[in-house]
Image (cartoon, rainbow, N blue to C red; front, side, top):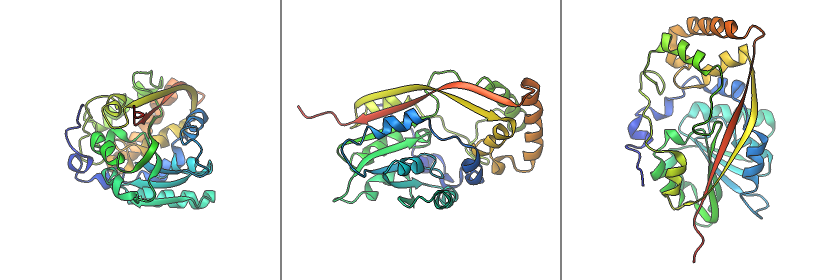
Length: 280
């Protein structure tokens, strides 16, 4: 089994503030997961009429609120109180009342489940790389009911092509932020060891199935510029007084590449579902 070197709280002393300033932009500019991903997740909880799903690293509820729209009770967990506050506001605006928001580290998952009410499943969407993955999965073994699942969701499957404009974004980031990949202001991002699927296979949830599905993603120039504020490495908090100049440079660079201001790419999302092997 590959082990991450450190837990999120050890790697990042400021784990709760990595996404400072990202809450409102996240709600405004992050895209929902493709319908095929939501359809696939909905097949995982079996006959449960109203499954109880734990969504770890929930942000402002990008996935949690869509799961709630599909009839789930959701416990949404994040280290950032700013993200949770954005999620509560977004849920209220959408009229969703079946999400409970909790500020906690993902390794505390076992404590979130009551002995009489384990979770039917767990989702971790575009957040697993921030976590001490083996420790989280070990905690989930105490939090997920027999027959339940863990689903790691990614907007882009590992090894697949990025958006065609990604190198342009990288050039601008390099000019304004340097070559160090940041986890929020003044904190270096720590690359986890090993792929997500490999980590899941090495856990109690070693019976793995994977969905990979193509989908179209489209942004306007304003949306693509706004999206940069949702990333820890290019957030307003990270850029500070460079934010305006960064965005002006980004607009010039992107406009030169696409005069009509339309940015479109086909991506491939992935869902890695792990279950405990059936007893023999």
